[in-house]
Image (tube, rainbow over all chains, first blue to last red; front, side, top):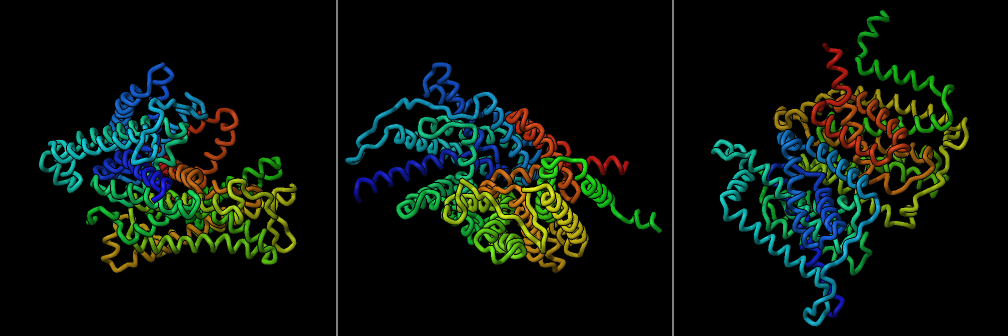
Length: 286
Length: 324
């Protein structure tokens, strides 16, 4: 492999880490409550703007990244309590309602910060020598952070009583209620955690992407792909989906332009859902 | 006798006939600009009714319905520009048939693949995004993001239809109203036919409908194809009127706009989406000139409030009042 191929390959890994970070929240919320949160991209955007505010107040990015999950988590909690809680029995309606919420957030940010781009200084410029190639430090840091979050989530969902309850609800909601699990409480906390993760992803990504009020939408569609391909309800499915999406982009971008590669990834998702509606790595839907 | 037959017409159709009458007598009192935006409103209203057929009547939430609208617009335009020998009727047939072909493919993957619920919504959204990207990328055919302009007029017999002169525009306006009336009554009778009742039954309880021996996927596919054809026709007629089309027509923006119109107007009625669309697009043309960002903020709030408190939309409120 020549140097460019290696860089591309590391880029693919880094991109799949970013995808994972973005799609986790969407996937957890969908798995647990059967709700697709169309405002997920806007929660990501709110996280990015938390970092923007931190920078405007003269603080560095790390503080912004620290505050973003707290702020967006609170926004998520408020959303769940005020609106989304009412729709759990009607998943279609939730799609429309959360789309309304996403419009509200987008326009509020546009009115507060203007429609233009915001720029965040990269606090960790420069690159690190990695197997003989120079690779940006910040991207490596993102990979590290995503890895830590994934391990943390795995422990959280598989080793704590809260996680056990979550998994019980994913398997059988009615039975869990009957066994005395406070489903409403779990829903509320899980939704907030999902929102917080999206917000954190937004803040972490700020030095690498353009920040504007419309940034949530492409992010949302990528997260959808990961969830569709990976299936719902398991972290491994999520990782699989993200790796698949980014590897497809990586290989196809050798032969085509990025837009064409994206079209192929979309087509793959459409065809795949016919063959395996539960996703490549998901369990069979009853 | 007259009273009796008047009573037999449903409330919905009465409202539609009143609106139709207003639309028919309006042109002498309006400016050219107003006729032009009115024509656009009516086309969007047709588009909204077609979404309602699959969402309100059949229970399939599509987040990518603009795919059909935009495809209709592009098919008609490309046929008119690249294949002028075919004439207008071929172009219109194209704007009907190309979306139908896409709908057939999607039915095979989605309806016969038993993809339902939110997955259906997401996949339709992905289809719409894919087409938008394709249209952007395939510059030699579609001129990409630059968009297509000018678009040749439609000509049926000796009549020409577009927005260039007042006479042509008024003709076009009446053509669009005629199409709207036709489609309203087609949908009216379709939703009350055997198929329409079956669709309602499937929406309420798909398992029971299947146990009774009905072909669920078949019925859904018919509704989906009909909706695609209608949306395609609306898109096709939109192109020469606006004289400009861009990949945006196929994508997320219009797909979600039409959902808002239908949700606010009221699902499961034909007149709800029709009125909802006209009111919302009218307000948009007024307010988006004055307070652009704030208007979309209001739209978002309206959508959330409607979904929370009036799930049946405007028509739900109206019919409740009347029943009291």
